[in-house]
Amino acid sequence: MTSPLPGPAPADAPAPLAGYTVAVTAARRREELGALLDRRGARVVYAPAIRIVPLADDAELVAATEDVLSAPVDLVVATTGVGFRGWLEAADAWDLPLVEHLRTARVLARGPKARGAIRGGGLVDAWSPASESSAEVLEHLLSGAEGPMAGRRVAVQLHGDPLPDFVEALRATGAEVLTVPVYRWVLPEDVAPLRRLVGTVVARGVDAVAFTSAPAAASLLSVAEELGLREELVAALRDGVLPVAVGPVTAGPLEAAGVTTVQPERSRLGALAREVVARLPERDPVLRVGRTDLQVRGHAAVVDGRLVELAPGSMAVLRALAARPGAVVATADLVRVLPGGGDGQAVEMAVTRLRAALGPGLVETVVERGYRLGG
Image 1 (cartoon, one colour):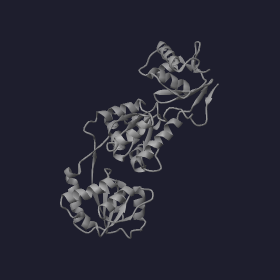
Image 2 (cartoon, rainbow, N blue to C red):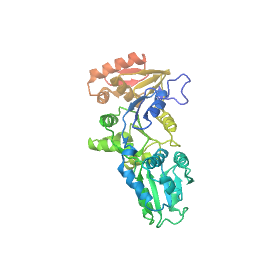
Image 3 (tube, helix red, strand yellow):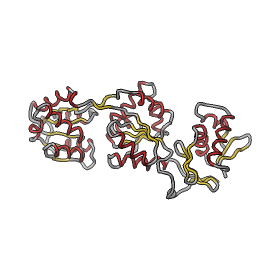
């Protein structure tokens, strides 16, 4: 009899992400996120989806800063710590009196990092939302909490994403909104890893993709569009590959494409890694096959607490059998799941290797019908 086995994993079980492959799309702090996942046993694939245009080289920021300086500002929205700090530092390098100019404005911080940058720059933060979300900042402004918006000058520090809904909602109130693109996201100089990731996701060659910024999510979708694989990418992220976003802003482009993401309660890298740990293994139940505990993970199986890495063909056969525990899976159906195709002989070879790796009794042959998990 084969059935799901409830309860926690044994204390000596492999690392929680052992046997899984997770793709990291981050450019900044990608090593930090990768290390968090690697320490939990994951195989990490790096495919930076974006790069940052250096502040000192960005003429657009100079023009936006001069626009802010052209008249008094009533409200400032700081969306990111690194961005707001970079804006102040760049203005100082260009001998533009930005800090002095903003002292009379009420400065709102989207989160604690932005708040720290405001204080570090010698300014005073007036308010920040508990949710650390741009949506709550907008709700605060539209509620009248900062007074009527009509005719007021509002500077919004952007974080790569142009925030069109945020900006247009403020302009609809009659406010003069000045957007400040402190840094801009563009495609990486080497797009090849990102293109490979698109193909890998479509082929379900990774188990999860971690996103730490909205531009990275939008970039992956854009590259998939260029390759003619957008629909296939979206389908894979809906079924098979787990999309994990650090927060709702990051998830925006994916949600708009019809992809439901999972997100941690707090928008932090550590919380993101913990979310991957919580979500990936729970998708793969521990099965009781005879007297053996079996869990089928991304590219490996856990057999009685022992991690067993398998060749792609054997892994595909095991996954198909585990999807219907105890039921006979026809040889023809197993042929269809073999990577690169094959025939009945290829299935038989994959099963032979599977038995050698997992031990006897787990995979049974049902003569002239196919195979099943048994024991």
